[in-house]
Image 1 (cartoon, rainbow, N blue to C red):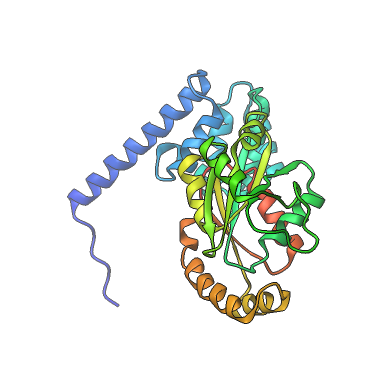
Image 2: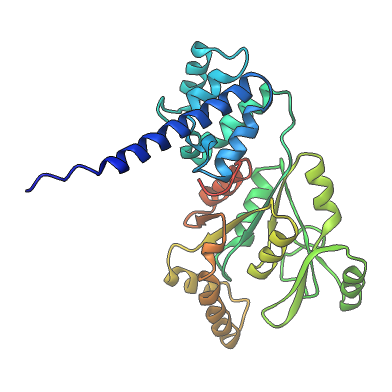
Length: 300
């Protein structure tokens, strides 16, 4: 194998200058934190919004040691407790590490974590309702937004718990009064909508809110509230999705076929979402969704 040619001198000079500029930019970030010009959580937000920024390239150890009164010994202990490697950079943290580091620093800064809205969507019969019900029963700290719908209740569904079942006239009134965050016609039949006031109140109080809606509704919520986190629930396989749909027995064969065609289109939209969770086992999928409710920034 022939030796790799050396890069031209001009390339080495440019790379050296870029490295120096990057070090200076990171040093400026650390100086801002040390002098209280910026908070550490502000730096993390910038790092997770733009991983290629100076903040994103900053090592977590450097950020922590820049925080006034948080010296090297304490910083090393915090990183050990949070399971963060010495060489880890801010932009390279995983979901759980982001959540725990953010909460630790926010607590030190005396702040209150802002509310977080997570929108759970996915193809028909993937189990959105089952995952949401599990979260309702096992994570009481999470507020589940209750949608309004013009469709009749299914067996076992309770008004005000699973949905607000309203008439077409009442739904029209809610639209006219701007009482809905979003609304849509689903499967070319009934209308579904998200009451705005309960979500606004919960987010202002710093609560975590879960909204389970269809794909179109998720897009509309993101347009209204860009801070919302979109989570796409996936089936383990297409065959399993078909089995779940045909097995629940709530639609006739013609409706099942139509919904499966819709599901193919919906699966193609998963790249629009911030995170994807595979619903192989309900409890595991639910815990992953709840964990994402504390994550700062977009995709890790």
